[in-house]
Length: 115
Length: 114
Image (cartoon, rainbow over all chains, first blue to last red; front, top):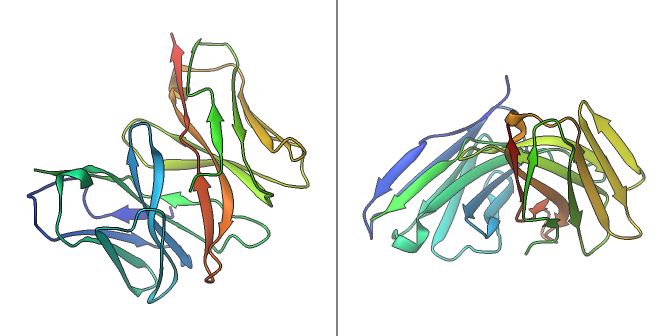
């Protein structure tokens, strides 16, 4: 069964810590995405990548960075965690959408609490 | 930026009834997708409808697309308690830098009352 795996289901970190959220997919997808989801705000795109070492900013990249050294792995980094980064983080992967369009496969999410 | 907007924001119906939720979007699309999210979990892809299609079925799901009105609807027939979830529509974006993907709406929260 193909899947996207996020390394942690729940995470509690202290303000100022550097936080790494890992995402691994086994479908050989080109595209990978990081979203955060907050009540009433829906899914907001943080960063995405369409190839190894390639990355693009989404709608809310401030305070985050990403790394894609291998095709199957896309890491989200909170450089200095703050309480307003407490959220549910969702990773997804897909083939390039192109003209046909393809569904995303999502991970189960990481609920991060920054105290 | 969010292109798709679902309506209503929340919907509560009795088990066995049909549930209809709508999605409106702003710019031209080549396809529109619907996803379901159970509480506290990741989203699951339900169905994709292309711009040259008007209606598509998958089990108890029926999706329609009206490109002239820039809108889509998702109908769930004979609802079950397990259909309780949030439902999102998603439309295509192209970044201009070589990447493409989907933009999601804020979702419709559906509650099926037993």
